[in-house]
Image: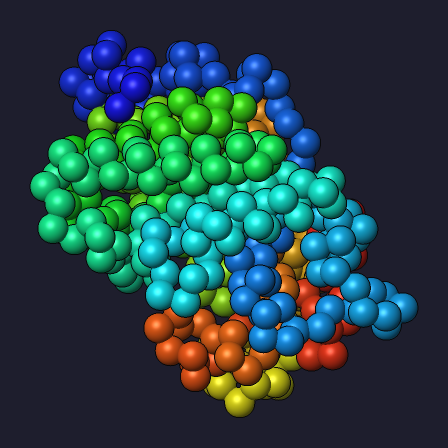
Amino acid sequence: MKRRTALTAAGIGALGVAAASATPALAEALGDRPGGRPGKFVRGADISGLLKNEDFGAVYRKANGRNGDAVKILADSGVNTIRAKVWVDPVDGYNSKERVVELGKRVKRAGMDLFVDFHYSDAWADPGKQNKPAAWADLAFEDLVAAVYDHTADVLGALKRAGVKPTLVQIGNETNGGLLWPDGRWDQLEQMGRLLAAGCDAVHDTAPGAKAMLHLAEGGNNGAFRWFFDNAVANGVEFDAVGASYYPFWHGPLSGLEANLNDVADRYGKPIYVVETAYPFTTEDSDGFPNIITDPEPVAGYPSSPENQTYWLEQVAQVVKNVPGGLGRGVVWWEATWTGVAGAGWDPADPASGNGWENQALFDFDGRPLPGLRTLGKL
């Protein structure tokens, strides 16, 4: 590694969890990259599945019904940031370094920013699974730390050579229980911290204008956020931003999200983003693969509909905008373009797998933009 974190060098790890409560001094020491000034509000869309969808025949339409480029449609609607996940060696070739660079160039041409989401796996990483990439499975721990740094720097370096400068870089995906199990699991806190620090260091070394973000699911679970981020601070992880997933049908009432984000802002002094949210616009299915959310009222009193998709987006955005100190910085809709197309399913190892999320995209089953997309572009 080219760089040791300033906090580790200063011995902050020895201070333990109590260090996390020293919010003003900590925020001043770490800064709000770049320059310590609030940036624009992120009106974001995760479109990690777009390239695969397009290759298997997905069609996206403009508001007038004519076919169009989904990336340009998002930009024209007011979306200013695109989030894209990156896997290490996916068997289907999608969400790889090369594909993220391809998408990143399109995002740049459309005038939007790129937000890179590192999973550090060959497939999905989330609270229930954090599987090592096959190529890293037998690495000694020190080599695993180096692999995180090198992979992160390699992808960001490829983007840089392509003329794409990400504004946000996520180090691990929904890492409530750690990452790269078992080495960086929740019960190996020092090792978890070193792996996260390696990713953050690679961001600062390779893409110094970007914020290195740590990301948890369960946006209303304050205990989970305090535990994770207290330990990240105690172990010298030099992160610049906090990301949360919040799905109202899974993660509790808005009051919980509000209380958690406000506390996290006060406790750590970092910019905060809801980087995943969604709501169904219908209970119908378009590809014959069961939808993940099928309840006619995923949240009591709010039936699945275009209107309630818009409602929940507005409510989540308002919570973020109300975070004290101007630290609420954006909202990202998860898989806005993942419409149902045969062959473009969720499992990279199974071409016959389907899409259980198309009823939560921001395009309807005919590929037309839903009202929620206009709302997202005006947040």
